[in-house]
Image (cartoon, rainbow, N blue to C red; front, side):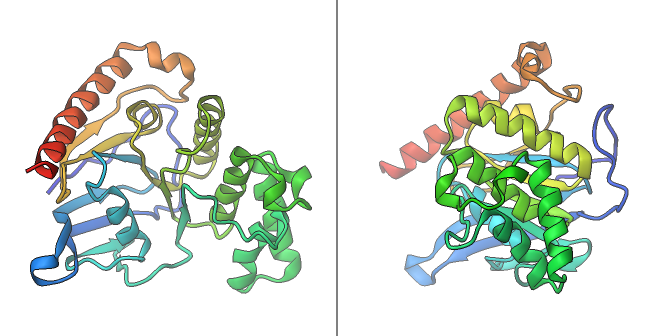
Amino acid sequence: MLDVLKYQRPGAPTNSSGKGAIQISDASITFGRGASAYHAVQTTSLRILPGEFVCILGPSGCGKSTLLNAIAGYVKPTTGSVSVDSVTVEKPGPDRGMVFQQYSLLPWKTVYENVAFGPRMAGASRTEAGSIANTFLGMVGLKKFGDRYPAELSGGMQQRVGIARALANYPSVLLMDEPFGALDAQTRLMMQESLLEIWAKFGTTVVFVTHDVDEAVFLADRVLIMSAAPGRIIEDLHIDLPRPRTTESAALPEYIAARQHCMATIRSESRKAFEEQNK
């Protein structure tokens, strides 16, 4: 089993709640049956500590999003188990916030209403939900846009609303599935920096799926690299870069070494996937 000793890097956020521990135990995920069965994730075990920022990398179709969806509760493991804070994941829950690549906002609700929706469904009063919405909209720099509708916002702004909405239930785990993949390079970098600032304030456990090596190395405490399908974790790489991180971090030798290592591993696995598809 891949494992890690508890540690705290200078500049890393403090998770005072102690919540957000993820345990994946001998989990495999298969879709379909018999000859048509597709093995998306091979037997995998993993532990993620409260407050860690973990990125998952791998070639296209390797099961990154499937593994993330198992933590979210959208997909059940065929064998093995997934648990958060020692509770087996059976379905989605407010302890796990989810941010998708597509913004997934309710188009008929204002920005304010989108963020307040989760707390209202969890039983908060209208006043309480409104206060929570304003707090998180302020945190992502969109408090002045509360009365706008999603279609009136840019892609980056919509994704910031998505992050605020995911955090509004104060989840112990934030799950992100290529959330910045559709953004232009400059907006993407700004979103990465904004996300790290929010994470530093909350210390929420983050599991972030991406196909971008630079993004993974810039954001993560650990980068998990998955093999070609059926996916399994073949690397658990600690990123020893000081925090807080800035654009200048990309010039550090530690960053360059981690990037080169990830690139070489991904290239090798992508080649395997390509060769398998052409048999």
